[in-house]
Structures are given as C-alpha cells and as structure tokens.
Image (tube, helix red, strand yellow):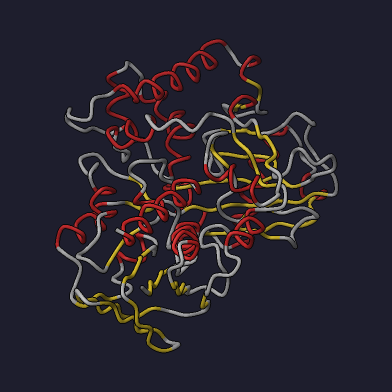
Length: 417
C-alpha cells in the first residue's frame, strides 16, 4: 500500500511515522520549505531556541513528553499559571499581591471553567460567555475571562462552545507544562528521520476514487492508494486544495463551521533581563494580552514574548511591524513599571500567523452549536481520504501538539484497517 500524506506538521509527521514504521510506503507532501507547520523554532533571534509557533507541552502525561524522552531531548518544566501575574492598568502583580476582589475573581473564573468538565454533552450548547453569566459573573469579569480562558483557545468568550470545551476538559493529560530545551524543531527532525518528505510543493487538486488517489502539485503528479489530509482548516475553507469529486456536503459544513482567528507573537530581546528572576507569565486586558519569558530557566535569558489572538490580533495586525512592536513595548513598560525599555532593547520581531498563506491563523475553535464539527471533520471520506490535524482532535486536546500527534496516529490506524 502507498499512502500520501498532505502536510508535514505534527499530525502529518505522526501519521507518516506510524505508517512507515508499520512497513507502509509513505510520501509526505509539504507546501512550506520546512517541516513543522505551525511549529517553527528560531535559532537566530537569541542564544537559545525561540518558538514562533507552538511552544509548550501541555501535560506531564502527554505523548509529546514521551516522544521528547525517546528522542533524548529534555523537557523543561514551566509554571505559567502557578506564577501568573495580573495587571489592571499598572505594574503586573502576583495573585497574592492583588486586591482581594481581583484575586478572588481570577480564582473563581478558573474554578468555574474547570467545572465545565461536568457539563452533560446532551444539553443545549452555549458559549463560554453564556455559561459564565449563568454562574453569576458580570461583564467586567468576562473581560478578564476573555484574556485568561479564551485567548489560550485563540477565541473569545462569546465564540467558544461549552460542549466542545467540556469534551476537552475530560481528557486529562496532567496540568504541568514544559518546553523542549533544544526546541520543538529538534523533536520534529528526530521524528521525521527516514521519512520521504517533499517540501516546497503546493497541492492543487486531489482526485480520489475507490481505487486510489491522484495528487496534482506544482512539482508533478503523485499517485497513491490512500491519502491523509492534514491541511489547516483555514486553508481548506479557502477551497485549497480542490477535491474531485468534491468533499461531501457534511464534510464541507464541518470545515466551514470551525472558526480560525489570527494569532500573533511579539518578541523582544534586551541587553539583559529587565524583569525579576521569578517572572514567568503576565496578563492584562491590553492588546498584547499575555506575556511570558521565552526561556526563563536560562540564567541570562533576556527574551520576552507577547501572545495575542482574535480581536486583539486583528488590531495589532492592522499596524505595520514597527507600530505593532512599539505598541507592545509600551504595554510591557507599564506591566514592568519601567520607562527605559526602548534603550535596552536589542532586537524585536513580529510573527503574524493570520498572514501566513499556509495557515491563515492560529488553532481552530468550535462555536456554540457546532460541537460535532471536529468529529465530522475527522471522519474518513470513502475508502481513500482520511483526515488529521489538531482541529480533528475531538477525543484529545485540540489546539495542542499532542492532540495533533494523536490525530495523526488515529488517521494512520484508520488507513490500516
């Protein structure tokens, strides 16, 4: 059997690895000039790896952490939420230093979010905002929830499905977080060893019948018995690639039901750390809503990252690079209580995933009333088309690397049945 895998992100590599190790002939086709998809490690910005895309391992029991160990790499613990600092307009402060009403509100929001795991899946779906209002939170509280709960999903509190969130929360991979010391790219290079990967190759048309597939690309035509599609949802929504015959109406409805918001990271490198050694994670209601130190376990790490999604990112992305980076730097000065950051800055960079033609945004989320979209997207089309990617991770954690990997394994197993 010969299987073609479209996309060399985490899910595509996972599918290809599984099949290759089972003795199946696999051809991976990737539009980018590199593997990784929305995993993109930069080794030039600082004297340690800096992640332009996916950055964390979310859970001590994830397959990602197990693969890091198998690769002989190191997972560095990161305590973001345990060291959260919040700002209501001035310097960011640790939770125990905040006014009691703010500290209590943040704690109550996290507890209410955690209780979503107990929400039955057969009740009418509603948004996270609707659910929080039912819990007694006012509109001001929802602005805090938008930063702490929704931004991490690349969404807003008004557009997140509670049924989808509940399904995800029931999958427990542990609460600890890690980084790959050597960078996520090092893990993927190890994982991709020996695979036949054709990079820099755009797929234009996938012809599929019960007897096989023909994939037309700008580098020629590929033939296979099966095809696994791991192309990001936002690209599929733009009709890329074309399918002949077209995907089923149900599949197209699922693709169009999912929502993808832009996601942007702002990176700043200084002459030395301009924050105290305990700083890990800061959040506020500004444009650059969430900040973390890029390698806080490195003694002299002087890089900090802002991460914004959804409406905040649309506002940032409307600015040119210099304007966006200046806006982020100004907010960082307020959060740190300093006015000298422009003089201390040595480099800055913006990475805007919404402008990336191979992603068109961050991770996919499910709006209220469309909780089955991931399940439908994950289902095979006939006997030759199979689907993977973080957006299909209905039985794991979407919006994570481990969810993408597990979806690739699932699709590979479906091919082998």
